[in-house]
Image (cartoon, rainbow, N blue to C red; front, side, top):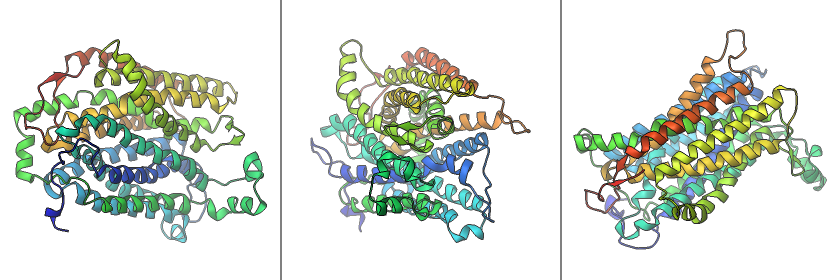
Length: 490
């Protein structure tokens, strides 16, 4: 399709841009694929990983957590390269489309671990290759998809930007909620007799649900690949609806980056990154250390015996509740008392997140004492963690977009993603460091979680000291190059 058939600037409308539904739909399907795979990685490596002969070859939890966070760290670092390719060379549409195909290949490779191919190629190699492809695909498209949302808006409908970023984040969590509930169930062996609700179904349905072929790595890792293919198709279908900002070329791109004014802007936007990184060092552990902890808890809740890797489903469910609750009730209420800027929201979220990990540390002291506490306690920790996420994550996402120069939007969005990468690097480094040669760990039990509580509290206090000195400015597509007048973002 010729380039001139695409919109290259936001239409002058006051309503929601026509391309937004395609972008949001694409994100929901892509997030299903990613979080579905992501939800079972740690439990797969610690309980179900086999060797080529079909024998169990699982990892120690600390080792699995270290490698898991290394994978996530690499995935969230690669957007730097995807952003340069999108903004300078190919444009966002081509980068997203091509790398989405690579992404699908990664899911397909992981699915081979449950096929006869795993008897010819070591499953650990298939795991590594699949994760590399997913990191390349997901990492490459991440800065492009989120900036593509902001590119749809200009001066006439910029008032809808905050709302659409919340809806964008809503789609992320809608996709992840469904996948984190379903995909773990497709991996782990299932006994309907232990589940009062399922046991009441017709015998034929119970027999179908207990079929071993329904619960295997090829199905559990393959279904996310199907949804990634759907995400790719939805994105392609919206090509004539959304705005395509043309690439500026490497020479122009280089001039934009390497000048004094841009340098000042990038340094400004980087200011929150190391602080938000520690937030992600804690948050991402609901896919690793929190799952390991849930293995030692009583997971009977609402009449169902839940899998440890399914408990994280409550996080996106709580997000779906908290996003509108915070946007339409809490924030306006607080605004009557004190101006609620993005940095103040993020600062509050850091303190709240420390509270979530403190509760998890308390739970761990009970487990260390030989008790088997109810999973309800970890669900309460998820409530607090989700409140912190609602304050930090969508706010930093919007902050990164609006504070970036128009020609460098994808690159500046990487500051949001680099914070996630750095946080996972920190957690991976901690987990590698605490492993002793004899298989023991230096930070055992509740002391592990308390380490992160102290790290988060120290970060939050330092953030509160630094943020009053920040001054930024907002840039949107379709406005004069100078952007809006400089304004404090405290």
